[in-house]
Structure formats: C-alpha cells, structure tokens
Image 1 (spheres, one colour):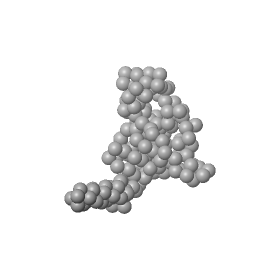
Image 2 (cartoon, rainbow, N blue to C red; image 1 turned 135 degrees about the vertical axis):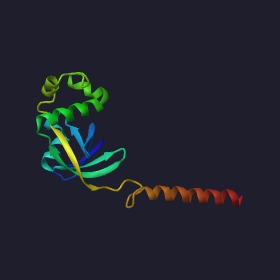
Image 3 (cartoon, one colour; image 1 turned 30 degrees about the vertical axis):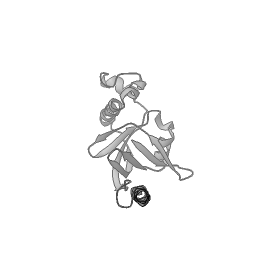
Image 4 (cartoon, rainbow, N blue to C red; image 1 turned 30 degrees about the horizontal axis):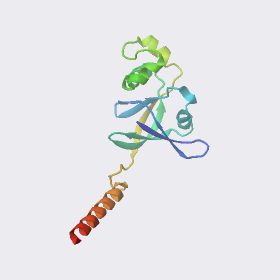
Length: 150
C-alpha cells in the first residue's frame, strides 16, 4: 500500500510504500526498520495517515498495537503478505514458531489504521480523473473533424 504521513518538522506530506494486512475493517502495517524509519517517526508526531490501497484511499487514525498476541497475529499476517520481503526478518513467516516470530518482531512497531475519512479517488466526484478524460475526448473529436474535413 502507499502510506502518506505528515513530517513532524516541515508538516509536508511524505509518501512511502509499505506491506500491509487487512484486519477487522482496519489496515495494519509494520515498520520493518523499527521506529527509526522516517514514516514511523512521522506517525509518532502525527498519528494520522492517508492509505492508498488498490480499491481506494482514505485518511485514518493510527494506533500502535501493544497487545502481544495481536502484534504476533498481525505481524505474521503482514509478513506472509509481504512475499519474499517477509523472509528478510531471518525466518519463514509461514512456518516459524510463535516464540521465534515474537523475538523477530520485538521492538518493531505494528500499526493499526482505522479509517476516519474517505479521500476521493481519481474518478470519484472531486477527483482529477475527468481532466485527462475530457482532454482525450476533445483531442479525438478534433482529430475526427480534421480527418473528415479532408
């Protein structure tokens, strides 16, 4: 997914791709490099982010998952969804024991993002998709007029 956070010093929006899992209507992600990741620091200062999924995008409230069992379940699901990147933690997320997984993700922030407001997608009302489509149609009509005028 694409994750957009707000920088703590500049207030500018910053974009980064992250692995994720869907859970109970929320989107969960894990900061693989820990709390030193720029986007994890941004979330610590401003716990709201925009999430871009294949099905659309939304702004959401970000919470750090602290319950050990929930961290383990979410962490495993995210690492499984990550494909080969899930193996960079040094184990197989599909087959490793819960104890080994818990040690592997210890100190790594796990986040749950709960949707709070929807953002318009490109072709939603308020989106900018109509601009390109309109220009394309106008160009096609102009081309057709030129061809027929010959």
